[in-house]
Image (tube, rainbow, N blue to C red; front, side, top):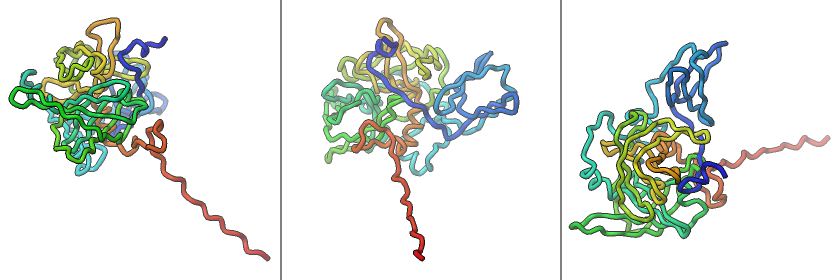
Length: 318
């Protein structure tokens, strides 16, 4: 039985393409171009899009870093008028706040995603009803509902939306983009996307989700590591408690910005939760057309263009 079978939910993942890349100059005039995930005394970890490479230091002649890394203050791959309207990036250097105050501000943007087979969490990335969750929460499902919670005069009001469409899926990185299409849906509270690159090990983080169906549950902890490798993928590891039902929910920094998407834990241990770095989420949203969900082929996260037609001219007869 594989390691993933011991996690909270069955998971699937994918490789990302980055709009900006760093370059490692290697011996023998070779080079590696990708996103530097970690720099260690004896090696450098680089995401090249389809896999993660660990390059020994003694093979590196020099490193060229671009100013445009995928961070909270960096420009996105899409034109600013399109990408900036779809989600809001965090502001570098935002001040830390009290968790209790942030939960009051952010709680309405965190939702519960339900299917006939189970439930998970999610959160809005803009006011127009677009929300992020894990792919494994809605995998194989067509009947999806989203429960939104709001506090009114000390009471928790619950609204269920049933006209939910799958917009895009990245099954290998365990991400899904959904859209609420109920006619009477209002403008929704949404959350800004920060930067996991700006985090340091030991920083405080907190999660909001629906573990075991208990909506708006808040758990707090620290970032244990930024580069926990599990079967070829790098995750944020946190001591914030993650349980079945948290999947797809946000992991926040102390400025109230999303830094990760909680998606799994080790069952036979405590304080061993994992989250997808938010940089992968922003890349997924920036390139959502490349991951567009097709009802013609629900198992395929990619949309392929029709092949060009070929016109064959007959040779004139003699």
